[in-house]
Image 1 (cartoon, rainbow, N blue to C red):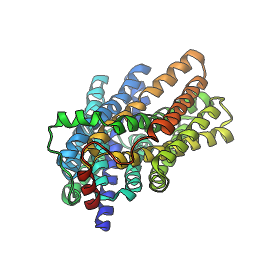
Image 2 (spheres, rainbow, N blue to C red):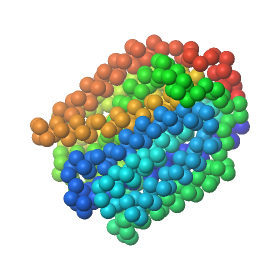
Image 3 (tube, rainbow, N blue to C red):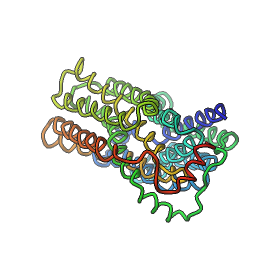
Length: 406
């Protein structure tokens, strides 16, 4: 069983990375589309935001469907369906803003893969290892780094279609492999209630709202920086586009590496302590960076500290979900929490851009991030710390059964 569980974790992590790679294809090409199609700054932002919003909101129904049908069914379906918008964008859908928005809308399906993988992985591991396992799975968010580092280079070296064709091929290979190899855990709890009733039950769970609020700060902060950091570094520090992109990649990779570490620490120290520490570091880093220090020392340390903390905090949030959610509702809760995290990354770049346009500095935006992190820290130490370690809703007997069989 342990060996098979780790195989399922590896397959799920690869699937998450490949789907996130596809989900992030448009973002690196935003400046190119802005120039080639004469887009306004708002239109460029909209182009990048549409897959993020759709992928975030789509996690809610996809997570609930995963509870019902299992990851073995849902992972190949999500991967195969994502091939269609990827091919459309690469071959025909990049000639106008309307075509890009239509393709980007359906490209958002790739972003729902997160809500498939968490319940799948959760069911394969016992409670004392779920933090690490889900943290390792969460490292698949590094698929966005693959896109950031390769998309523009592939277009420059070959053609606009090249990165899309390669990604579509990777999705096809994974969809077939997942259909052949992926398995749901023995004894997986299958809910019997209709979808609407299960979603309503999910929204009544305290952990749904607690984890959503924390994930909106932790993962939302990661998404926001991964999207906006190149613009910030170019505008605030005068870096070249290539230098800014490389630094953004370093930020992303550190956050990705820290996510499983955050889960591992949560298994040993408890997710609340890890979240509190992470949010404290984010608050301190944002305060330091609000003074726009020299990038060569303080600025770099502040950003790397925030990257590590946001990654660890994201891992700890889903360790908390695994700890406090009934076994037959993990997918539904994951969908809602994942949506909150994705949407949490949508707003900050807009706020940062607006504040910079108004004041000519990013100080106010970073000070606001420090305030948000401080509020989340206070909430973690009060409202979240006081919660039960085991869920009260959904039947304790079913939860214990899932834990002993998973």
